Amino acid sequence: MVSNSAEHSRVDHLTEPQELCLKQAWTYLLQLWGTSVDGEKVFKDAQGGTPAPVSPAKKKNKSLFSKLQASYSGGETAGSDEDEQVGYRPDLIRETLKDVEPEAIKDGFWNMLRMDYPDNQLLRFLRARKWNTNKAVTMFARSMHWRVKENHPDEILNGGERAAFDEDKKGIIKNLELQKTVIPGRDMDGRPIVLCRAHLHSPKDQTEAELKDYAVLVIEQARLFLKDSVDTATILFDLSGFSLSNMDYTPVKFLITCFEAHYPESLGHLIIHKAPWVFQPIWNIIKNWLDPVVASKVLFTKVNEDLLKYISADQLPKYLGGSNEIDLDHYHKPDAANDVKMEDHETAKLIMEKRQQLIAKFIEATVHWIEADSKEESQRFLEEKLGISAQISHNYLELDPYVRSRSACDTNGILKM
Image (cartoon, rainbow, N blue to C red):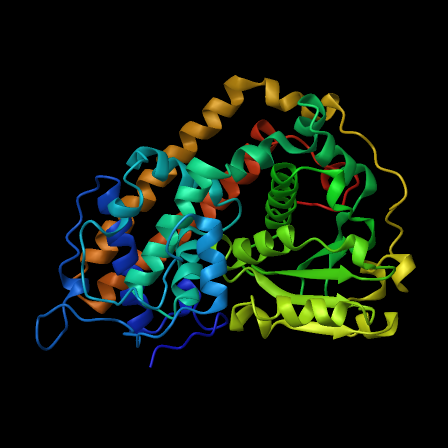
């Protein structure tokens, strides 16, 4: 059986079956990009020489969650139970991305990485689909379609909070000024904490489109805190003062879909704090929408002292019983003076050229790794890939201030990249 533990399925700690799955996924992706790679070996069973499913699944009826996700993705849910692993299918990604140029997908993939290593980003999708390569690749393709053609999260992140003011997006501005969702620090495992103060939400304050863009902005900002060693976040829903007037199922559905379909394996804990009695029937509805993996990460806390089991006092805002001095009463509008490097297009171009060179080296090493004739050769190219991955991650640190507008997390010093 292929283990589904994230702790033991990093790119440098894979079992042989897991590494085979990753090689298969890269074969699909590289061939989509027009890179010549012989992936025949990784799609053949070692004994029989026939296509071998990695983790065949039994067909069963779609869950309520699957139907919910389908309604938000415009079609079949990514990696649904009906998608059987049937061996190598050359057009698997192309079928999903028929209206997107391969070069746009390539750019989208490398742009989305931030501090992630390329292999570990693909591994999120493989773990989410229990190492069924075809399901994982289909899920990944649908997520890339969402990023490139639908919600454009990279543009939302790079435009940042300043773009909301420049474009007069009143609903996003309202949420920013309320500081409805903030990142005050990290939990005891080093995960960034996304604190959502539910009593500040009013459905009439923003349009559905503005709410989605705001949610994506927060998620992508939280991703900036992730590193190769800490690659999940903790979401803390503070329900102090929550009433039925704050309830809005639309963003809840959108967030569930985001974390399951587009940011898989990115959630460490989901803490629901001080839920009032009126929340119980609401929770009875929501919990049926959750993927079982997400549902297993939900924790309920009743009093502030309970939070100290997961978050140290210096990282927890004062109003929740901690000693964190974060100012939740005053929001400072982003200043263009913080983004002066974004006007330096020449330096940005030089850093991007270096990035493209590193990407080309990574792809070349990946081809050799896939085509390796021995375990020793495969390991040598894997180590080369890891070295280049670290350089690509560092390159993003150099590039970041030239392409991304500074957020409140940058200017208040909470985000240290």
